[in-house]
Image (cartoon, rainbow, N blue to C red; front, top):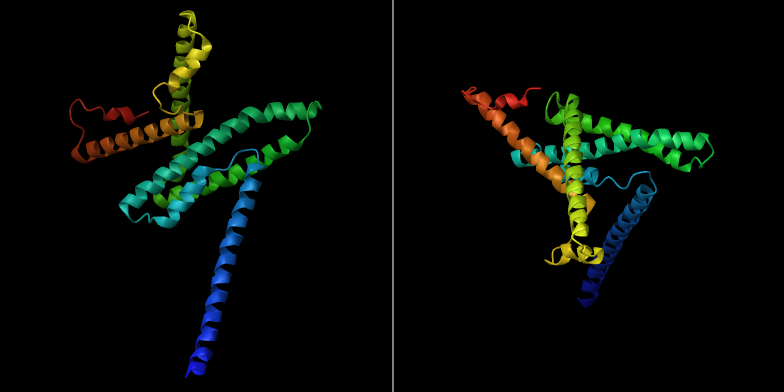
Length: 238
């Protein structure tokens, strides 16, 4: 009986061990491939598009048929469009001087080639965002980047206002005779971490998206109940 049991369990344990090794190999291979993909991304003109990654992950976890999932996905897609608009503006700003420097022989073509590749990838990215936008709301593909451009412009204005405020505060401290090393320590006195430029940009973007969502809800309520006297729904008109 012992011999029979051993004969039965040996192939079972062997199959389990092989399966575990295979699963470990698959996991290791995925990690290796992900690291290779990240290295390839960092070699590009722009850093890794985190908003695109977040959107794709959310699309795998949530269904647009669910109201909560729909809101998550459309908000994430808009954030992805905001990133695309910023990159489009950056390419428009940096492409002409780069081309001029290459023509003048002041620099090699490597950086310009990266920019051109990024431009082609961005064209494909914009098309992908528009296709997804159309799936969520018919006609949104025609307006999503207009909305994103408006939000980016407001975002940049707020960032500039915050930067001007910061510079004014620093100047007032210098005028008061406070040494620069003391002003540098001031933000850390309360123990809170200093907000980075990227964190500030993301915070402003989140605020703008919340404001836009509130405006849409307000406009929708006004449309359902009629336009009351003294209503401010005309704010949506251009």
